[in-house]
Structures are given as structure tokens and as C-alpha cells.
Length: 194
Length: 47
Image 1 (cartoon, chains in turn red, cyan):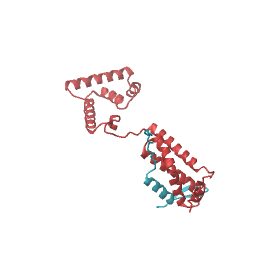
Image 2 (cartoon, rainbow over the protein chains, first blue to last red):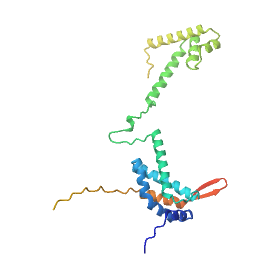
Image 3 (cartoon, each protein chain N blue to C red):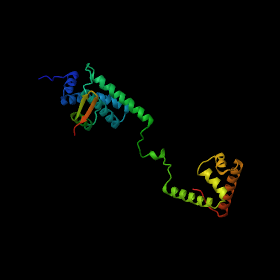
């Protein structure tokens, strides 16, 4: 009995009619060519498998939704889908390249975590707390200007308007506030750096 | 008789996807139904 090769067009029509076995035949018939094509572009088996899978998911969805027009070009159509997915893969990879760790290369050699660790956080909190205590020791007018400038981020014009003094006076109070802070810090040998 | 030398052809490796990938696709196809309505096409995956 001669083996009858059912054309792709017939298999596609049967599959669209509900015959799941036809899909199996189609995949087995063309998997080598399609997978080989994908692998030749991406040179990675895992990625090639992913793209192969995505290709056929699109094929399945299109056929099942009866959106496919059979023109005897099933394989070129599938190859075009896989080609477009390969392009998408390279575009994505360009934006966010994937690095695989090896013995010679560790991802942490190019990535660093700049967020402060818990020790730095504690020290920063302590420094801020100490600084606030020192500011409390300043004369009221100097403390007011310093707090408005540093903590409320007001301009000297705004500080002058709010406190009812001239800009020069506000500037002067700020200058004296900083001088007095430095004197206290130096006198008591306080360390306020992280 | 002269020796015959011939270049050995490199073995042609047939590239194939993983068996699991193909099995997944076939299972996915069996589970998937697409429903056309006037609002669009809906996918339904039966577990």
C-alpha cells in the first residue's frame, strides 16, 4: 500500500474543521525546517524552542478562529510568522540584553546595587537626628530661616516676605546660623558624615 | 591501486524542537476554542 501524502492545504482544512490529528501531522512534517530556521538566527536552543512555540500558538489561534485563507502557502506563512517573532526577539533583547552567568562572568560585575544598606540607613537617621538637635540650639531667628530654607525649600525672597524682613537680613541670619552650627560641631567634635 | 581519498562529509544534524514543546502545542490546541461574536473573537481554554 503506497503512502499517501496528504497536502498541507487539506490538512489545514481538516484542522480548521476540528481534526486535531492534522495539526500533529503538520507540525511533524515541518518542524525540522522551521526550528532549523529559527535556530540558525538565534543560535540558542531554549530561545529557539520559545520562538517555535510562539509561532505555532499564533498558527493555532489563526486557524481556530477561521481567519486563515488557504492559498497553498502554509509553510511560507508559518516561516514568516517565525521570522517576525525572531525580529521581535532581537528588538526586545536590544532594549534589555540577557546575560547568562558563567564561571568567568558574574552579572554583579556590571550591575550594582546602590541602595543604602541597613547600616548606612541607621547612620543617616542618626546624623539627621543629631543635626536637628543642634539646630534647636540656635537663636530663634536663625533657626527659623535655616528651617525654612533647608526643610521647606523656600527661596530667600519667600523667607523675607514671610518673616517680614529684607532679603539681606534673611541672608545674614542664614549665614550666622551656618557659622554657629559649624562652631558647635567643631567645639564638640561631632561627626556628622556617613 | 591508487588510494582513494575522500573528504568525509560532516554529519548533518537535524534540528528539532523539544518533544515537550510539541506536546504542549498539541495539548494547547485540543484545549483551545475560539468563539466569534459580533464584538470580536474570544479565546476559551478548557482545563
